[in-house]
Structure formats: C-alpha cells, structure tokens
Length: 251
Image (cartoon, rainbow, N blue to C red; front, side):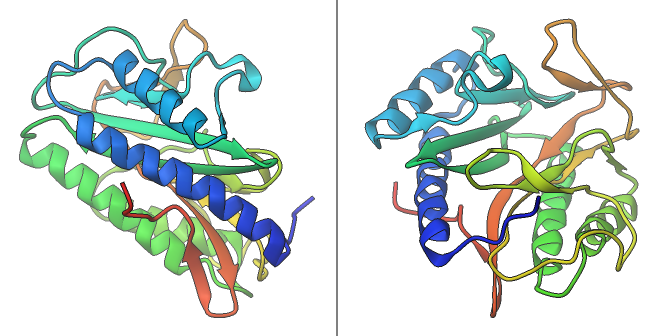
C-alpha cells in the first residue's frame, strides 16, 4: 500500500527528518582521520535519544547499531567498529530516527581528509544523481522517472548503479511502498501523488554495478572492490514540487 500522508503526518515525519539531519551535521563536525565508526555511532545515538527519539535502525530487522558506516568499497549497511578511518578514504553514513511513531531517513558520503580526484568525482556525481532524482519526484510523474534520472546521470559518467538496493516510502514504517529503484524507464511504475513521503537514495559504484553481502549478513560491498558512494534525502511531494525534509543547518 502506498500512503498519502496528511499535513499532520508530514509534520511528524519532518520532526524525525530534522533529527537525522542534525545528527549527520554532528557527524560532519567529528569526522576526521583516526576517529572510529564506533565513536561516531555512540555520539549519534546519544544525540538522537537527547531529542526524545529512538535510533531508527537499531534493532530493526536485528541491525545492531544506530548508524550504518560503510567505508570505501562498502556500499551500505556497514556495522560500526573500532577500525580508525584513514586519510583519503570515503565513508557513507546512513542514519534513521523514530519520533512520535514516524521515521526520518538520511545519508551522505564524507571524505576523510583529502581524497583523490576519482573519489571526489564519484561523490559529486552521486550527489548530483540525488538532486536529479528529487527534481523528477513531482506529482503526476512515475517512480520510473526518478530512477531514470539517476541512472542516466550515473552511467553517462561510467559509474555502476546498484540494482539490489532501492529507495522507499517513509512513514510509520522505515521501509514502505513504493520502492524507488535508481534505474528505470520514464513513465513506468507507480504514479506519484501529493503527500507521498519518499526516501530517494542513489547508491553509485565507481566500477561495476555488482555487489555482494559479507559474512556478517549486513555489509554490502562492490564485487570489484572499487569505492561506492551513497546520498539520501527524505522528501514530501507538495503542490509546488518536492520538498526536502532532511536538509537542516541548525547544529
């Protein structure tokens, strides 16, 4: 079932989105060579709970942490550990929050210190894919329009678009219908309506689109070992176009 949210419900999702956006801004201020993913996870959980919210991922489907911290060739769902981050790496951090029964979901890829041109190009292109996907999310368009916008921009640069993982609706459950693939054909799939809340999240690989899951059952990596980037916003479709709910600059 695809939900169309009332203004009251959107306001509740907006509150959770504010929390996850502020959490990533807190992480942005902390992240540097030498810090560990587990240190970031502890800080994120403390911040979310101080907002009288719950970490959206922790315990969901059995996931053990507040953040997903995915380094270099890890695409998503990396479990935070005590391995220090290193100069020149990229790391994707995904965070969710649950407040008053509604979720917010947000992710971005960070550079650790100075990164080389190829890493920077991958991050820039992936962020552009997110922007184009959001632009395509207007009432009356189709889910396939979003995926096609992302796919065309990524593949025109020679990057791989992950097929096995997708964006999704957001509301009282973290993952709701419709699924939002990062590939597709214009005009195909569910038609978008005002009030729908969606997490759009391109996961773009520097090389092949192919991925596998590590033995921990969570961490998804690129098959060719090349880096991957991930950016995500939660949006609501309004009469005036898509509104990003996870973009705040208050911390």
